[in-house]
Image (tube, rainbow, N blue to C red):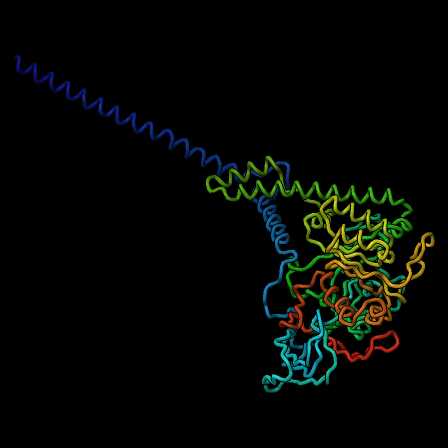
Length: 519
């Protein structure tokens, strides 16, 4: 009996041990199970909530849609800011060229006296180009082999320069003959004195006959700007003075653009501004009020730019999140909303970001000074002053305030006398030429074709050498227009094959250059 009792007790102890082991294992599984259930519930909750529409926004816009839309704009702004004023790629493609209206096959210009944008090269040169791009520039005496079938043009020592650039023009907006029905140069007075959102391209007339007349004077590219009635007149555009250049031979506005064929986001942007008597005369405000309106608009643009930058900084962090990204996106949009934006202020925000080449119409010394003061307050640096009749009075002031801003004075015979202030003495003689680097007073034209054809002769009256004349007509104009990366000097292959052949002796207003059509 004792043995049976001991065996029974042992068996009971074993069963109790097994039961306790099972309970311990169950408790361990329960410890693991609860976190797993919690994670599963959280994942289900996130997935369910990610499909819910945001109440304050349109029903079709999910948090993900608004986030992606904002991120695309952030990347676009970052890309434009990084690419502005950077050298373009070394692509050997001219996007404007097409095999229908463009020159056929290879062309070589022989025995050219070459002005390369900086100086006149010794000897004569052969220039080979095809498909709208200059392939080589070599001294004639080297007698490099010419591909079979090449069209050869012997210019017998005539000057060859890159196509001249007019940095201030209103043709296409004021076509010939000038009529009220086709005058689209100034937007006034409906939208007020600050109209950065209007675009010159929307008023271009591709049938304007002055395109050919301007090109006949060697000016192959022009910066066409809105007029100067408004403090901010709107966006300007670089055009090629070559009508009907498309494959279909039709008057298409887009085909006039210098950067036609490039994606719009990769193109240079230009802004026209004005100060002084023009906006004052048109709107009846004082300079005090007009300056306040400009500062107010720029402050609104700067505030919007700062809010956009703050949104993008946080959004970039959210995008890099690897765990529960949908949940983070939803939380971000609910806390910060969609990316701040304003269709009306977009151009001025781009100005604050430094994406626009700014060209300012100003006449008088005090207007130069105050305009620079306002622009510098918001970190903006203009590319050039236009029509600067009184800049000769304050060259040192301008060099000290904005060393890399140049001044374009109006041509001596082309300037309109009514624009000069009768209350101040007129300038005597020609404007001073600046002594610091990148400060050069350039004489330009305004509207008429005659003025554009007089370009080279007017400049020769005021500067010191023919090379300086041509530097002002060519390289400085290209730099001011923001296209310096597009036009390399003759020492290297040019990106675009716009050239002018000139034949001259002494350059005077009455001993005119005989020009061949721009090539």
